[in-house]
Length: 590
Ligand SMILES: Nc1ncnc2c1ncn2[C@@H]1O[C@H](COP(=O)(O)OP(=O)(O)OP(=O)(O)O)[C@@H](O)[C@H]1O
Image (cartoon, rainbow, N blue to C red; front, top):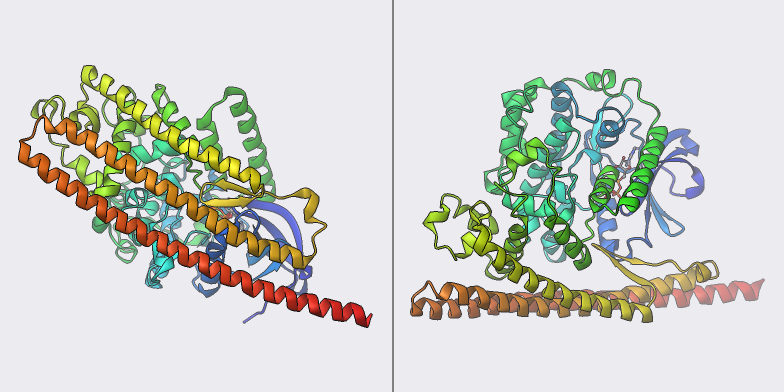
């Protein structure tokens, strides 16, 4: 097999052709082979605490061998970046193609052709034990001849892994619009069926030019995905699509992952009778497209305009849209964002599309406050009791307002279409006050963290990444050795500060959960006989104990990670000492 060089000097970087959370992608020339390639430059400083993720991505990519999956030729470090050399996909991503030429989505034969190829990639990955976890139009790449490949293993996970990596499937990664409900809930982990959900959302994205709820801020996307009926193809709006397409989407977007078909089974779906060869793609959507670099530049300019407008209007939905345009997967899920987004949801929304409206609960705009409250409270309960929010809501879908006591939690909280305006308004205000109180306590914690950041100016938390702020004054003056040892010691300090923060947040969350449970119990006690209250208390106690055990085991795992990091640090120090000795020896020789 052809061996690509692993020296940065053997490559010549041309223009930028894409970017994501952790990487910038360039068109490049592999000089010895005189071959155009793509180089993904992962900025190790931008994702310092996600080295495992990077290692995983590179490992996964190098082991992959399938015509529908982007493979890596080789990878190596170049300065503070890790370069991954890949085949150059001159057509770019489907998201970019739609943004530049097909804002309302593709025609059915094109969609069927694209999806069939993606599905072959998924069937292969799943058979190899991988969950892709980031299936979306932005990661469907086309070469100049119309070959389709699935890219970006930044958040992929292996189903056969145990221990640490298995646990990573319980963490919150991925783009909210494409994220399966079970991934959002973070209750019981998830499996490859999460990819099938994302595949269904991607099908809608290719059909409409955007994913369902893509214009909304992440918090709202989360609420809508959890509480609304699954999105789908609309009877009126999507007349141009066949019944088999509608069926395919509906099957992929079943909320219960067990009911979703496997990728292998989906390959036999009748919709794929509409699939063609790659020539169709070359002759239709790739025909007369400007070069990828130019398209990317235009896209960046548009993005900059949106940013300017958004800054002028102070509109955070535009911000969300900008992230969508960039096809970014990370979700900056911090309490400040949450607060801002919850406040934004309060404002009445006039922007729901007809299709989104069809999927929204009745009076959704008016009662969105209660949705916020409901989801916070229910998801807090769920994280304690392990009960599924979705089940909880579905259990009550057939009940009407009249079936339930007027002050029942379902009427007041969860049953969005059954909310009684008079009772619920007061209830919602009370709950909102309590939520903001909770948020305040988190924010205070965040402020603490910020203050402590003052002591350690290098750290900054950004969603799933902890970013090291570059220090322009010192960087150049550092020798490779000191930089190395600095990075290693930062890892240790970073892990322990993260650990402390997590423990603190967990215990605060637990207290808050208990407080909220007591509150709900007090409310329901009026309706229940006395012995049920005693039972509830017992249940509450055992649930809290189970949660505590869970937290303790998480803490132990984190401590183990810290120990590993400390060991790594020692190793690096030894290496540094050796290098320094060699350096001195060399200097003496000279
Ligand atoms: N081999 C390639 N050929 C052409 N363009 C590519 C290639 N790989 C990636 N791109 C472009 O670069 C963009 C970003 O790449 P990628 O998604 O791998 O980065 P990332 O940082 O992992 O992104 P994300 O934010 O989705 O995690 C893609 O959406 C695509 O448009």
